[in-house]
Length: 341
Image (tube, rainbow, N blue to C red; front, side):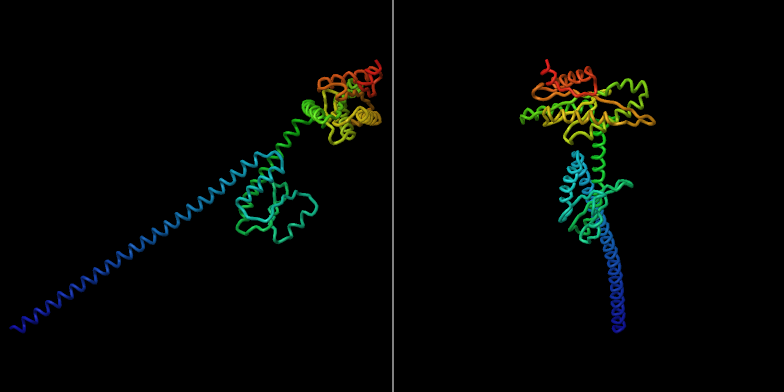
């Protein structure tokens, strides 16, 4: 009986030990499953965290790009000339891109194709719609920075367009649309500046007032379109007869005026006679009509005839009146009139 009891006890103990072992194995398996699940969740969390970090970095990069574009655009819009715009662009570009040199090459310049063959240079084409503006030529730029140059280059194109529009508007504002010489207002502003400069440097300055002779008869005989063409051609003759520093303008109607910086009476008479003779010898073609006309010109000079633009305009106008009174197609200087008195 004792032996049987011991066998039963041993069997029971073995069974209990087996059950405990199975329970421990099962627990370990469950724990392993839970651990794997936690590891998977942790991995997914890390991946999501990394994805969000990358997304954040990408967003920050885009924000930097946008801010950079804003800064460059804001700075460039302060410029009124192409050179100023490029200087600002290059300065801003250097803060974001490393390069050895950066050049702006205008379209149509001789040798513009040569730089495109050089491998060490990166060429960005500046183009507005279908119109070629020029090229940005950069040397020593890294491959990864080329995209930045392209983005900023497109902003530079917008800046150049703005400069061009400003110049067009300015040109329209200061140029007479019919004769393509300056407007009276612009000439008077420049006249004032030139008088101040002449005073500061103690140099002479001359002013011409010019009127087309018998212009009303041209309009009455041939019509206003022909009259407009006559004024247009006289404007061209004036521009062809003066220096680049001289300031020609349409004073009003058929009257023209010219400011001649650093010019004495003798020089002013020479210019006036050249214009008078050129108009007299020209047969102006207006549509199907050839028109012969002449001009009368009055001349005043700073400082002998006046110290301000009002005096100089009045004296030149008086000399013009005398030129018309004594036969037209003449040049009269105010000093000559006073000398004769």
